[in-house]
Length: 177
Image (cartoon, rainbow, N blue to C red; front, side, top):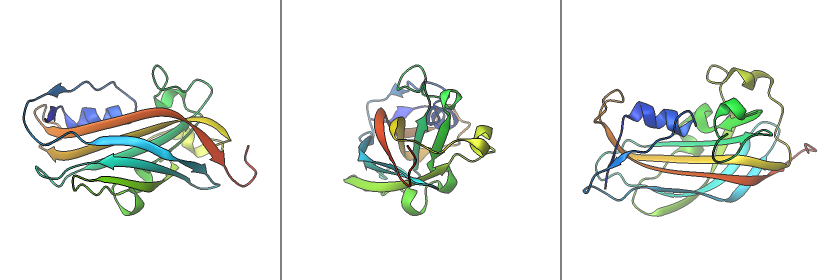
């Protein structure tokens, strides 16, 4: 099954800006999967997160991974998942879809550790002065897009889409508590 949606809307949804509820068609490859895999460590300059995912490239090799960790007193998986509620916000946007943050879309399950750094300031200005992560709970967002076809501005563009939003324990290093 392919989920139909505007790719620009999907990317905005992965940032927590909108809720995405794509329409479902009856044909096409299976939808991707995405999940937190039990590792969230915050160091002085980066956060590492292990994820498990499955994605496919039978329709198109174009894919995208977005992983974010957000911490703040109001952050949750439902009403307060957007960056508006974050005090600290790290993501894969510093090195999107390359190096440790690249997907392998071959239809099999993969577990990998991705590297997150501060959300770029031009995307989230508070990043310039945000405090480091502390030991405690944080929102982990994992979004996988596969088989991306069409212009991002075309409402008929298609892609597979999977997301996982969970609250997880941060293990902060170097005396940050």
